[in-house]
Length: 202
Image 1 (cartoon, one colour):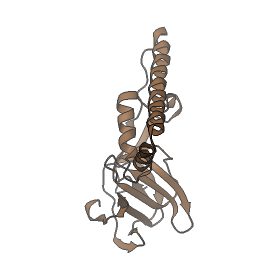
Image 2 (image 1 turned 180 degrees about the vertical axis):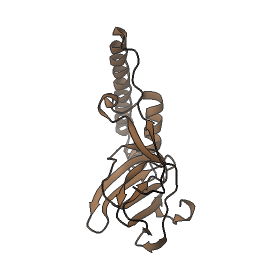
Image 3 (image 1 turned 135 degrees about the vertical axis):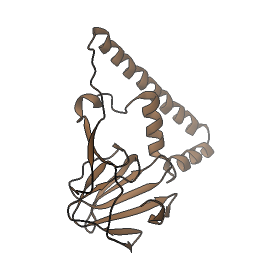
């Protein structure tokens, strides 16, 4: 890991202190309510689509448009309904590695739709913005690529990664370590289908 980074461990999920008999009942009740809400939203969407072909086209434009903010939807869902996966607390590690420093590089060059940053050896790449991982893929040239979307619809793609520590649909916090890169980090900034300059983000 890069010595320039200072790490701290942050609790993601607090352990439950009380294990009362009623807690299981409350837990199951909460899951039941959340499931009903999701089913109601799904049925409402189907009814809306079936009303007319215009509704169907509008639904497609909103849902499949690049401007749809998955991170914003996830944030609202998590705020009002809790985590998407109800058993997440019992399965996941309780700590995340987070850095409080900006990405450091010695040189930057424009490459294709993004930018190649020359970094130190075995560099720990951290998230520039908080958001949700909406895409992960492998590429012969850029190895592992992770795309993170913030709540305002900004997509940041991180390439040349190894030892990736996040997966699809994970919510990552600003500064969270995404993986390592040997000596180069590839970044792409885009919003509403347009590629942006790095100036405002690095």
